[in-house]
Amino acid sequence: MNVECLALPLANPLAQEYQQQNASALQFFAHNPYREQSYRERVEWLQSQSYPHRNQLVEGLYRFNKEMGSHPEALKNIELLKRPDTYVVIGGQQAGVLGGPLYTVNKAVHLIQAAKRLSAELQANVIPVFWIAGEDHDIDEIDHVYWGADDGKRLHKERLALNKKGRQSVSTLPLDPELCTQFLEKFFQGQTETAETKQIRELLTQTAADSRTVAEWFARLMAKMFGKHGLVLVESSLPFVRELQQPIFSQIIENNEQLTKVLLRAADRISTAGYPLQLQVEEHQANLFVYEGDDRLLLERHGERFINRRRAYSRDELLKQVADSPERFSTNVVTRGLMQEHLFPTLAFIGGPGEISYWAFYREVFELFGMQMPIVLPRMSITLVEGAQLRLLDSLGLSVERVLTDFAAWKTEWSKNQAPHPLEQQFASARESMMSIYRPLVEEVVSLDGGLRGLAEKNSKLLLEQVSFLEERLIRSLQQKDDVEHVRVQRIETALLPEGGLQERKHSFFPFANKYGLGLIDRLVDAPFAHDGTHQLYYL
Image 1 (cartoon, rainbow, N blue to C red):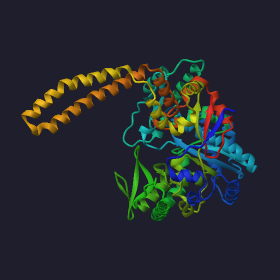
Image 2 (image 1 turned 60 degrees about the vertical axis):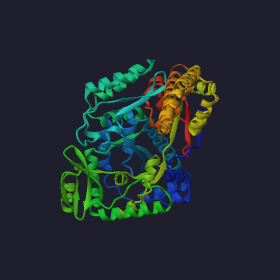
Image 3 (image 1 turned 180 degrees about the horizontal axis):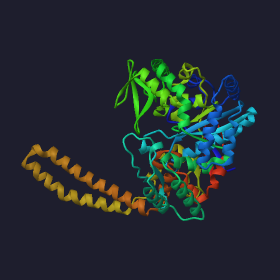
Image 4 (image 1 turned 30 degrees about the vertical axis):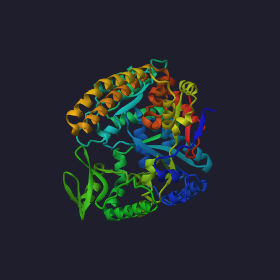
C-alpha cells in the first residue's frame, strides 16, 4: 500500500480538539463529523427542507461547468441535483494561480472521496461541489506558485504579474496574455523536461488562452483535472448565484444587529472555553461587502446607516439595492456559509483547521436564519513523498515522520555531530593573532585613561563577534554549496517541510504533474486515504 497515516498535532487547539472529538470543542458544532449517525440525522433534516430554486441552480451550474470545459460526469452530477434525494458535500478555496498550493488538490480529492463513500453508506445521491472563492481581493495570497529549485536545495517563488486596480476581486481581474506567457515560460524553465512536459504545457497554455480572468483560469484547470471524477464547480460571483442569494442578503441586512449579537455571544463562549479567537467580532461589522464600481468594499453598520469608505446607505436603500442589483453584494467569511446552505442541500462542509475555527462561531448564526449548521468535516491533509526523498532519508537515518514532527530538534542534534569545517581552525588562528596585536593596545589605552577600560573591553568583544559572524555566514554558505550531507538535508527540508510548514501549504501541484503526469490526479482519487483526521503520506 502506498498510503500511510500519521497523527500530526495541529497549531490550532480548537481544530485539534474537534478532530479528536473532545466534547469541549464539539459543543460549538451541530454534529460529530466522525459519527455515522450524524449523516443520517442530517439527511432527515434536509428532507424536511424545501429548495424551490433547484431547477434554476441546476441550469446555472450546468451552463458554467460546460463553459469551463468540464467532463460529462460532472454535468451528470449537476442533473442529479434536480432530484430531492440528492445532497452535496461542499468545500472551497481561493482561485490561486496554477490551482494554488497542493491543499487545493487535496481538498478536491477529499470532496470526491467523501461523496462516493457517503453515497454508498446512505444509499443516496451525494455529489462533490467545489466553491471557488473568486471574490476575494487578497491578490498577494493567490498570485504565485512555489517549487523546489537549484536541484531541490531551495524553495523558489514565482509571481504572476497582475494588473490590479484598487480592491478588485479575482473574479474580475483580467489575465494579460503577454504577462501570462512570460509567467508560464519562467515556470517551465524551472522544471526538468520530461515525457509529461508537453501535455502539461499544452494544458496550462490553452486554459490560460481561453480564460478572461484569474478565477476563470483556475476554474478551467479544476474542470480539466477533476471533471471526470464528477466534481461540480461553482464560482461565488456568477450572476445566477447572486440572484439566488438575494433573499439571504436581505435577511442579513434586516437582522444585522442580531447577527452581531449572536457572533459576540459565540466569541464569549469560545474564549471562556479556553480557545484563542480566530475571528475578530466587532459591534459595527455588517458582515457584507458591496461593490462600488469594480471595488469590493466592506460595510460597517452605525445605527441605521451602513457605511463603506465611499458612501453611506440607509437600511431601506440597501434592501432596495439588493432587490434591484444583488450582483453588487458579496459575503464575508461569516455569511459565506449561509449562502452555501441556502443554495445547496448541504450534507457536509469540508474545511481546513482555520475554517473549522471560524465555523465554531456559526452554530447560532445558522439558527438565526432558520437553518441548521451542516456537518463540518476536517479536510484531509496529504504529503507527497517521492522515491528520491526516501533514498535521502535513508542515507541520513531519518524517517518522514521525524521530519514532519520533530525536524528542528533532529537538525540541531545532527549539526552538533558534523565534523568541523577546515576554515574554523583558520578563523580561530585569525582571532588569536588579532587579539595578540590588540591586547597591548588596550593596555596602553587603559594606562593613559583608566576610565576607558570598559569601552576598550567592549570594543574587543565586538571585534571578536564580528569575526565570528563572518565565520558562521561563510561556513554556512560553503556547506550549502559543497557539503553533500548539508545538501541532502536541504533537499529533504525543501521537499517535505518547506519553510517549516507542511508541503501542501507551499508547493504547487503542477511540478509534480510535470514528473508523474496528470494521471496523478486519478491515482490520488483512487488512493485508500483515511478520513479520520490523520495526516496522509502518499508514496509516489
